[in-house]
Image (cartoon, rainbow, N blue to C red; front, side, top):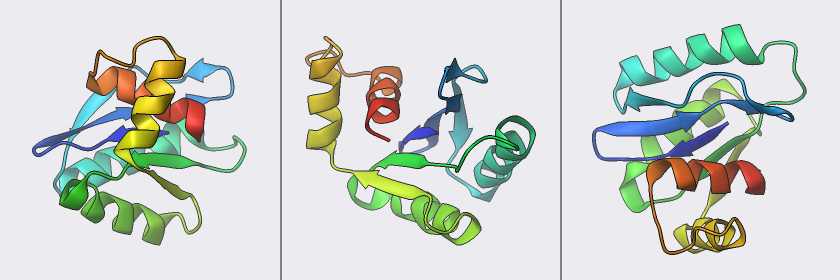
Amino acid sequence: MAIDPGKVMNRVWVCDGQGLVTEPSSMPVSRAGIGDLESTVTSQVAGHDALVIAIEATGSLHRAWASELERLHPGSVRLFAPSETKAARTQLGSGRFKTDDRDCAALTGRA
């Protein structure tokens, strides 16, 4: 799973080793967003290998979700600096063009 944090909405990609298992979505940064994410994890990721949650560490924007997801899924959260995300975007051929979806694609490659 890859999460690109935002001020109001977080962009979320849920993937397995083969690709996306759901359409990319934007979820509110509120408690309701965590609930939506947990519902997706329960329905889509159950039965797969160990859960890995890649989150771009963007100052205070990522902290609430990272903390809660680590509590719910101990040892699953991996934080990546924005420079690591940019480097991964560059390897994918889209280093100069930042979008939430490109960041999530880059994070899935790092996780």
